[in-house]
Image 1 (cartoon, rainbow, N blue to C red):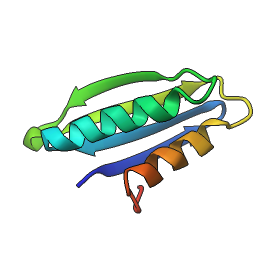
Image 2 (tube, one colour; image 1 turned 180 degrees about the vertical axis):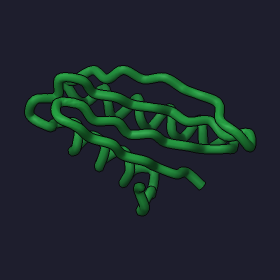
Image 3 (cartoon, rainbow, N blue to C red; image 1 turned 120 degrees about the vertical axis):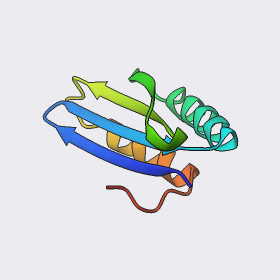
Image 4 (tube, one colour; image 1 turned 180 degrees about the horizontal axis):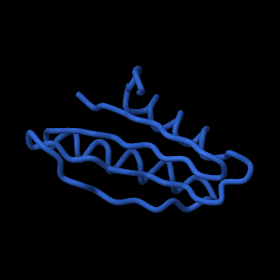
Length: 86
């Protein structure tokens, strides 16, 4: 199961996607890359290993004055069938 966490402040937004299995990692990577490629904004992204063998892909947009990242994050979550985001 893919878990999501969203955080937003003035001109900054972040979506963190946690996954455990290699198939989930591949799905997250290909989905995120395909969706981000459709938009002119370029995020900063990094992957971090956390406890219990999980990894987290963090997608951050800085200086997002017009809050365009919200639509991108919604599209990513819908494509990954993530219905709950903390």
